[in-house]
Amino acid sequence: MTTRPRHVLQLCHSYDPPFDDCARQYASLFKGTSFLVTTVFLTGAPRADLLENTLSDEVIFLESPKHKLKGLKLSLLKRVKRISQQKHYELCIAHRTKPTYLALIATQLPVMSIHHAFGDFDRLGRRLFTEFFSSRLLLIGVSKAVSADIKQHLPRFPVDGIETLYNRVDIEHSKNELLSKAKAREMLDIPDESYVIGNVGRLHPDKDQETLIRAFAKAKHALPENTLLIIIGKGKLQQKLHDLAQSLNVEDNIKFIGYIKDAKRYFTAFDIFVLTSDSEPFGMVVLEAMIANLPIICSDCGGAKEIVENTGLLFPFASSEKLAELLVHSANNRESTYSHDASLMKLHTYFSDEAGRRAFWKLEQIKKILSP
Image (cartoon, rainbow, N blue to C red; front, side, top):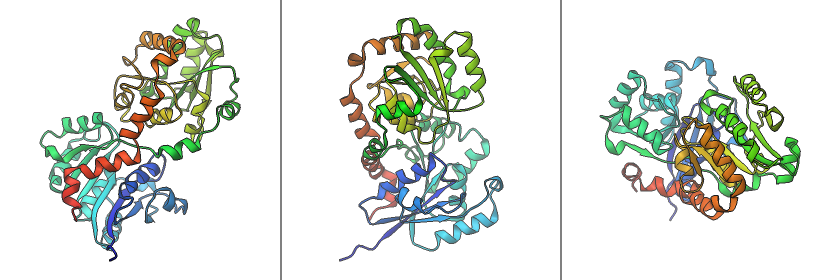
């Protein structure tokens, strides 16, 4: 007897990274089930590769201009409503605020709203809107820190209506994408014999590369002579960080690479990865560093802390003194400060696609919504 297919609708603002992979993560929750996933991108021209890359059974491109998405456009509401009526959908997964608003107003479906950032409910209007639709709304934070932020802003929201589902990664696929260490260093123009401290992220106050550079300057005399600090990314602080490196006399030991597409493939060029962010909602770069088998040092705030605990080293945010100590300690004690087996186990237990499926189907709200 053939099982009748069931349907899930997924709404995404765009397929710009990392939201192309977010769409994949949530479509993968239904792998091996009778559910078929239709993914709708509000913006962006059609791309044939996204059908396979997002693991969706159908992909629809609404091609709305990004600059015209402010407010709730009647035409967009009508289009989403029309799509929702084409099949017997049982759940709508909506990433970020605009898709959530559209799903709640244009459909009568239960909505699983995914929140990837802090402060989504700072505005009173958003809080009132969310509370009004609480009876058919499940709020998901991508880390416990994000979920706690939601709960703080929505104290009257049903307790079982706010849950955590970690971001996750296709571990084997990501491993296969990695360049060899020699190739990665060749392409980044890094000498083979260097000891490399790596950082990847926008050059922005939130990422706090300033603390990293100050810590590196403090630690430099106690690090191997061939140590380099490699910073991949671009942003408004680029000149300020260059000037800081020069003022601390470490400009010859720091290499600002700029933006690189698919930077995660180059993590093999590093010997250690450092994240200094002040409020990272999750920290996909930390998962990417774990996949590349790197020791990790991370600031003790935001969602990234939840990934690094018990497998890496944490330091108080903005403490260049403590970070400098850990840089020296890690350079001289890799074997005692890093366990590849523990890191890999944590990846599989909490941050793999399989772990995501286990956690998703255990959610009480999902059991009620998608019961046979």
